[in-house]
Image 1 (cartoon, one colour):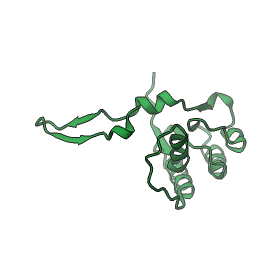
Image 2: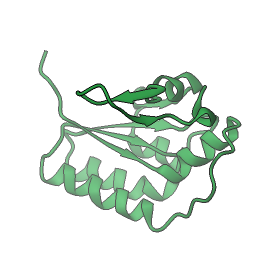
Image 3: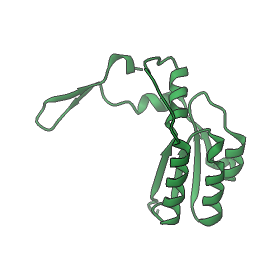
Image 4: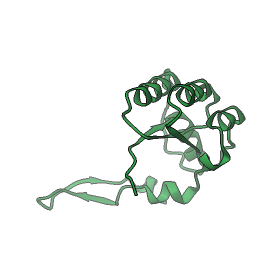
Length: 138
């Protein structure tokens, strides 16, 4: 099996709302500033520079569909996988842009819970360097 290089692009604004809907109301503030433009630029650049074989896009923002279509058109050997944040429906425009239902999935709450950092972070010398706040506990 050949190892594939994967570039992941996460739309934090969409993920923020998904986490918020799960009852994690600890977010104080969040402001989106051209994140979809930045994601689009980085996706296209990574594909054109051949920095990856597969692109993983976590969003439901249909504004990214043109970038997805461009990557598919300009770099047809690249695979794009779309993951929709928890409790969100797919954007039909994005769904069509990735071109195949096999490349689309929905994130589940347990995916987020399994990705949490440990309760305590210990450095090599045994010193506690961080503690995950209780409000982040699953």
